Length: 116
Image 1 (cartoon, helix red, strand yellow):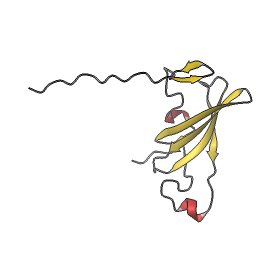
Image 2 (cartoon, helix red, strand yellow):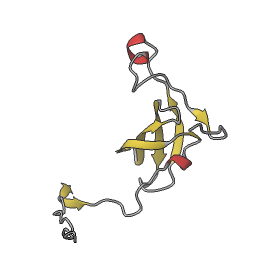
Image 3 (tube, helix red, strand yellow):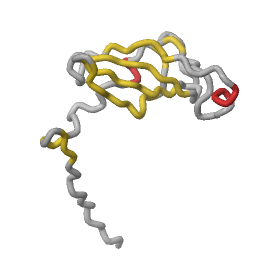
């Protein structure tokens, strides 16, 4: 009979901003692939900053063709009501185009049928 291993215990990692602990938002993720107006497999590496009284997020999206593209999103409170902007154009130079992980922007409209 196999011996059951105990559950791993990880200490809570504390991060502070302005002397207060920063905690993960319980309703994560705040932006999902079905919220963007184009077809994508998922959203990764989101970064949010407060700018001029609003929250701006840079989203890295992965299309069903596995190409990555970026877009901006904006919210009044940083938690919900995100307005997703257009895809940010990527550089049109050989070095960028020949990097497999970066290739050109190829976002499909939401109405497009994803290919698997």
